[in-house]
Length: 288
Length: 287
View 1 (cartoon, rainbow over the protein chains, first blue to last red):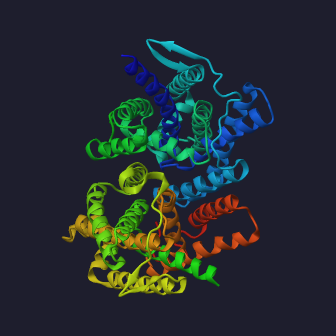
View 2 (cartoon, one colour):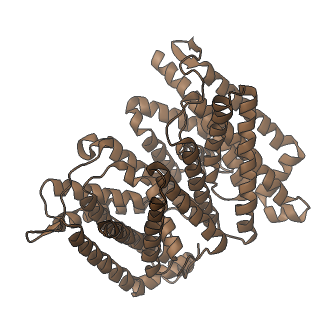
View 3 (cartoon, each protein chain N blue to C red):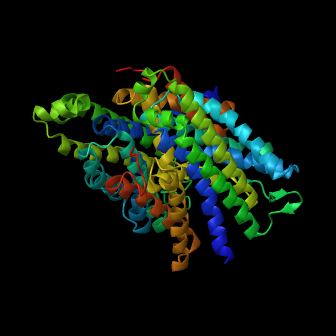
């Protein structure tokens, strides 16, 4: 019983983080139409920005975290403007954009490692001092509760924005058919810029969350992103809520799998789930 | 002088790997990130066979056969996908194989890796000096190059090009495109296994970290730089991307920063190529 509760807690925490990554990824994918791998590196970059402001400069959390998120989001916007937009203007294929974003991932990772070393670091100032709560025989830390709350807040805010605001409707129009959206006067290039800004900011929250929960290293982004992409595919790629659903499905399968087999096989379990889905249900659980 | 030969050996081994990936990406248009897995399985299989006392020239073909079987299974799954999903699924296989290297302790010795892998020998002559190994690797590179050149100019190669340009049209002409894609994928994986075997026997120590996704990305960068759709381009790309960052070593950076600046160079090369010269140096095909 206790072990089942613990697995459920772990799955909810992991699911919340995957859900954030999948949300940002889906937002970018549905408008820009390519697998933005570089997005993962920016999520990690935001965690390192927080590390710098919070631990090196000693600024308070309420300043460090927003600064970290904004820096990553601005980087996302700049990269979109100088790399992806010229490629899109040239009608480059999704593969070209994907390869260039692999380049972005490699460059950002290397820069982080040069500035901050490639060692594993935690964002919290005093590790181990976080409060631990016990429910039904399972343990969950205060940090993890904050992460879950933040993730759900972002999900709801994004859901409402996409559903009711002009911005959200315009984004959905671009996702549906970019050319028609442009013809009816939606400034698609400007909106895609905003999408990169917002999407990267959402991914950045996940990066910072990982940094506080378990610690971060420059190469952590790819694993995080793959969790998000797998979640997006399980849920139905480009479908915002599908990504959230997929995130929790993936987190449950992973955590049960880890309990049954061994923690070392986590990545293999995740990818096996991905490949099974791609074979048997390529459009995901919530088909569009 | 030994140092230059050492770099040339590495460049030649990566050249073989790049040539093999060129068959899949440049000739057939399938952007696969699974190559690090085949390189790794080839390296591990050859290393294990060498350590139980088998001769390299038996061990390497056996390892290639093992990889052919694995590649057939993976290729069957991958043949269902296209474009971005193909890339993602192939990356998934690289990650799965990497975690097998890491966790199948009894065979791979886990993260500690396999030490003391013997050098290749033939009729009592051991390729133990760096110069003799260089000759061996160059001969292998020449053979693989000749094979790839022949393959791409054969009727089989022309079907691959047709698949690259328009798979649907090719299948309407009556070609079983899946079979062609599968066959070239298996051939390429076997050549990657040969490169892995040469690498293991040369370095004499392998661990899982050499066969991560980063290695797949690196090989992809080399063939895009050299130019897709041109087998000479693969070798050129491998030599440039192996040799050029070696120069960074002489600038006097510490080891960790030198390794990271190498990654930085690879990433920048990819971005700049995509932006300004998507066909690479000698390419005839752009993604």
